[in-house]
Amino acid sequence: AGTVALAGCDTPGQTGEMVRSEVPIPEPFRVPLPVPPVKRPVRRDATTDWYEIVQRPAEVEILPGVRTQILGYDGVFPGPTIESRSGRRTVVRHHNRTDVPTVVHLHGGHTPADHDGWPTDLVMPLGGAHQHQSHHPGKITQGKRDYVYPLDQPAATLWYHDHRMDFTGPQVYRGLAGFHLVRDAVEDALPLPAGDREIPLMIADRTFAADGSLSYPAADHAGHTAGTMHDWVEGVLGDVILVNGAPWPELEVVGARYRFRVLNASNARRYRLTLDPPPPEGPQFVQIGSDAGLLAAPVEHGNIDIAPAERFDLVVDFSSYRPGQVVTLRNAFGTGDTRQVMRFRVTDRARDESAVPARLAEVTPLVPPEDAPRREFAFTRGVVGDRPGWVINGKPFDPERVDATPRLGDIEIWTFFTDLHHPIHVHLSPFQVLSRNGRSPGDLDGGWKDTVDLRPAEAVEVAIRFTGYRGRFLLHCHNLEHEDIAMMSTFETK
Ligand code: C2O
Ligand code: CU
Image 1 (cartoon, rainbow, N blue to C red):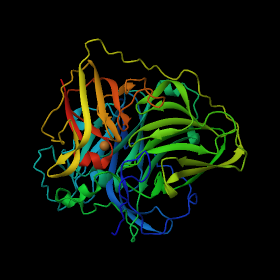
Image 2: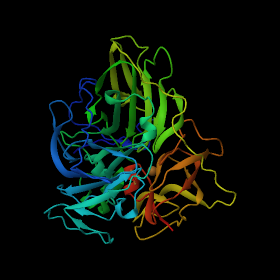
Image 3: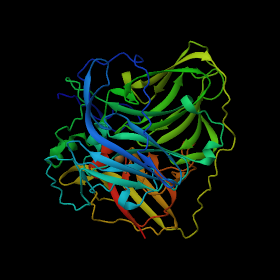
Image 4: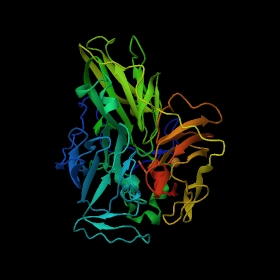
């Protein structure tokens, strides 16, 4: 497809290049906000819930009147939402009926290494003719496999997505992403908005080719090593903003509090979210949770900067808007159409028994001891093969190399630094941000995080304690093009 790359940045606050759609872009706010279906278990017993998901191609209508081929969990994008209870084992059998090998990672899951979605532990397509050519050994299964999640962790907004080595960008772009919520008794006891006033919002940008297909610029990426990915080394930005798979949707709300679990599932795009107009009374957003669970106490924000893979659990109170008023969720980092995300239409006043209590959950600060082990990770441009790419401490990802060996139970201090934008994600255990450039963390850094928005010329220190499982896990940039062109590293817990 004859896509157009805009050199350098689409906007401030961004790393990536925008690809332009070749179909007419619809007027915003014409499509109602879809909510992903909640998946029902096929079986449950005293300890475990079993699910079955079929990964398959499907033709769906994303833009009104345009047919688009996706790869979806159960053929939908976003995939179905899984809801688990903390401490109950969840087993998901994934069937691969796609045309490519896949890997599933539960992002934010406290998961044993074997089930964490190691990038070469491929599930091969059922009956597919796909020749597996990787020289990297992995635990290959044919057609399906079970992922076992202990979910021994507090209530949080997790998500699952593809994690195949070298191909995570294109495979997530085609649609392989969904929510996985963990709930617990602490959350149940809070009077937060619930039911149809609790809505997950998956924000993702996409570009559409003339035939309606999703236009990943390195679509011929089977030859990734031949170099096409490297032309998109900065990251792929789309010109259509989707929320829950719909372009600039509209949601009718009553004048009451809503809880939105906001996930940035974009390959590379960062957003600065604001409400236009802001509510006549009260804050725009009250943050109640972060990536890996509820905050200790709510935090008010005027805008939310959200990098790829981050989650913000937000309460918005529509009660001070007039019935009939429309409120746009804007993106101050966007240009043109990408300056808006979705719209709310306030219908009526309504009874609201929800509240945001001043205390939410126990968040014990991780206080590193004087002699805490320290590790440093530099996220820079580098050479991958013989092409430009991205490296950590000078090295591209090699699944056979271990770069750090933290001991289970220790609190370590990890410092991430860079000269550009990189959302840094650590598998297995969440962390707390200790400092940014030697100063106290920003007001968006609170609580348990698994992804931190590393910005140009920043050094971010985090305290992290790995628990539970010995084995090899990943640390990587969640700009998916950066990740695929090798900005990933392995640590092995001992
Ligand atoms: Cu969201 Cu290693 O991934
Ligand atoms: Cu990066």
